Image (cartoon, rainbow, N blue to C red):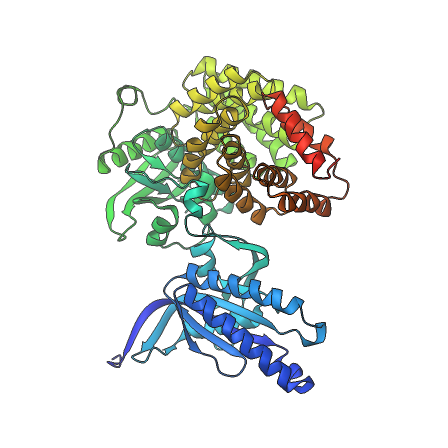
Length: 588
């Protein structure tokens, strides 16, 4: 029985110590004590500023407790940033660097505020794994904060640590250049709220007992996301975000907080011969309560029908209001032959690996789908995707020919099904590169209307607006894309910064571009735009510094290297003025 003065609770623990403390003391006790006192002051100020509480500062160590992981990591990042600046002023032999570990877990707390237990011990072990001046966190911390701080996480793998029975998965945070979002930065970057029911579909588990069947469960998950995304009354988190949890144990309530959704769908797939068993359960993210659960045992060719049933069950359970067209339309045109379904799911799996070899194999899979089901748009659309990837990543002998084939295949898919949203989106991209801005916007608008929850399609339409005559309309679209895909790619921020710049919202442009550069410090396009922002505001020293940063990251950089990416901008005078500014700042 627990002692009455002890309570068990979840907390984030920060543990730190000074690297090489004994060596520093033996070299110069007075200077080391002064440096330690200064460092303690930094720790105390940054911990309290992030709603934390110092538990102990014995010797050269620091122990603190926080209510949230984001508070602990934000404090750790802030501490290392300040201490790094201080140490730069010291001779190398006298520099005091701290190692910091952060863990989110159960602790026992006494009435006087002291904490004990494995949560504290694991934080201390993680601190021992950190590099001097660095931060190492547990998997629970990384999961909780990875969309809340613009810092990189490097997987250190499972670590066996002293006095902890189970291995601890550790992640190193890249401190150099790390940046914690200021209050309101998420809103500035565009995380718009919505009153609509919202859902995250987690990757369905493969229960077939064979790893090579993983593609099949992934394919079913992707199809469910696609089906649900077509419903305008439901907000659906993008595949790229939810699939980051693939293969990891999850807490539905944590998923709800991270993606800001009301419900989570999870399930499993077991395939045996010509039969398939699919289980699905809809869960309230705020409390983990099950809203609905069902098991389906069917023939393989009934997979799409099962997905339609699951979609209808979710619509009913969440009281999603359908528009008239959504009520009248069938959920999907299915592939009737099991062999075609299998080839389609294999193709999706290979396509998502984003390698030249996998892309070529995916093409063969989609060609099989076309041969088996020539009346279905899915095979043609799949081939269009692979041609587009060949164009984007330089995997084709002729990039223009690959882009042209992608557009032709998208057109074939639309002849078979005019409501194929991704085909419209692909044609929009093709028209944009061709300089047909009106056609690009029209195709993009059709794609977004058919699939309101597709983050990349919304962001692509925003790009069309931003580079043409509608930069103000681009901003809410990008906010929507970021809401739909919380783990979004950096190019969203690049377009968001450009759109805000064009309408004179310089603070918002600066925020978006700085967030992008925390992820990709060497991104020349973002630095060029940020230099333009500073120049527009008369902050010339900062503008010149950004131009020099471009050359520091890439000494061979020349403005002509940026010309192809800017060819899609409709206003050529705007581009000429942009280059004139960059030349004024020292770029050639």
